[in-house]
Length: 196
Image (cartoon, rainbow, N blue to C red; front, side, top):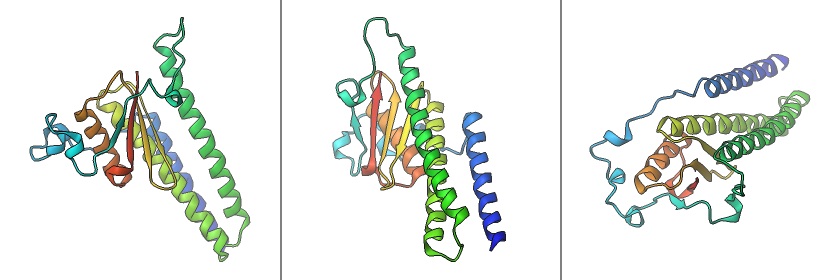
């Protein structure tokens, strides 16, 4: 039984290391060229997003107090870099706490106990969620956006916050496509917001 725990812990550490390396190296991953797809009607800028079944929701930032960023006198564009960095740090801290709690349950539990097995599964889900968030953020930045922040919930709802003054329907479609491909969630579970 000790051997199984060592193997699971080793796999977890490898996944964490891959995620960290991918995040630090800019997260180059596989992606199709969405703009060059000839038969992708969703990329057509003339298409009305309300007519596209399952289109992602686009919420314009800046009006919602929940998304408000300090724009008082003296605040410059670096405040938004601070916003993304701070929000990412808070998300990562919460995920680290969650991982530590689950690791303790796994390490202290019996591998035949259903609670320990459930903790192992939950730990793998959290690790996969972190890796997926980092991958999506990297791919969005590769598409020319200054920064992006992705929140994946336990219930497979995803919020994407992009640093941009506004987003076109085509940009929302590109971001949504990245999320759908990498998070494997339906389009209606995705919310795309911008912060300028």
